[in-house]
View 1 (cartoon, rainbow, N blue to C red):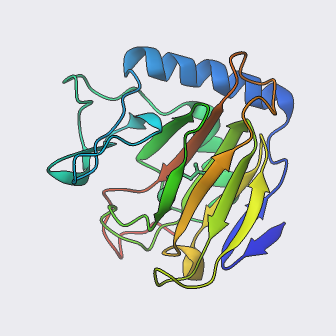
View 2 (view 1 turned 45 degrees about the vertical axis):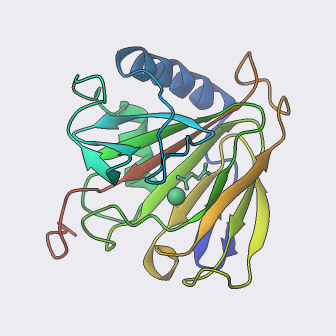
Length: 206
Ligand code: SIN
Ligand code: FE2
C-alpha cells in the first residue's frame, strides 16, 4: 500500500484472471451504453472516451459536468458489474453502496488534466479507481490548484482510493505508456471509478 498525498494506492489488487473477467463485463457495458467523448463546458472534446454503469452516469456538454439518469442516447445506464460491487466492499471502507461507476477509455495520446471530483452530491464518500491495461502516469496534488504534485505509474490491477483527507485532492493522468500491457488486444487503458453520486451527507449506513 502506498500513500500519495492522502490517496491510498493498493498495487496489484486484482489478478490477471479477475482483470480479464472485468474487461469482458465492461465490454458488455460499452455495448449497451456506447463510449462517447464528452465535451467540456468550454466546448472542447475530452481525449478520453467514456461511459457509465449504475443508477446514474456522468455526462458533460456545454451545460456543464453532471450526473444523469440516462446515457446521452436516451437509454438507461447498464447495471454495475458484480465484481465492482465486491471491490467497493473490499476497499472503500464505506457502508453506503456505490450508485455509479464511470468507465474511461484512454487510447494512444489520451490524458486527463488535473481536476477535483466534485460533481457528487456529497464528498463524504470515497472514490475508488481501478486501472486496467496500459500503465498510466497518475499525478496527485493537494486541495488547491497549482500546489506541489507527486506522480506514480499505475499498472493494470492497481486500485487508488480517494477518501477522507484525500477525497478532494487534485489529480489527473499525464500520459499512458501505450502498448505496455497486453490486457487489451488493441492497447490502451481502462479506468473505472466507483462512486456514490446521489446520496447526501449523513445518510451513510455505516
Ligand atoms: C479520473 O480522475 O476520473 C480518472 C483517473 C484515472 O484515469 O486514473
Ligand atoms: Fe477524477
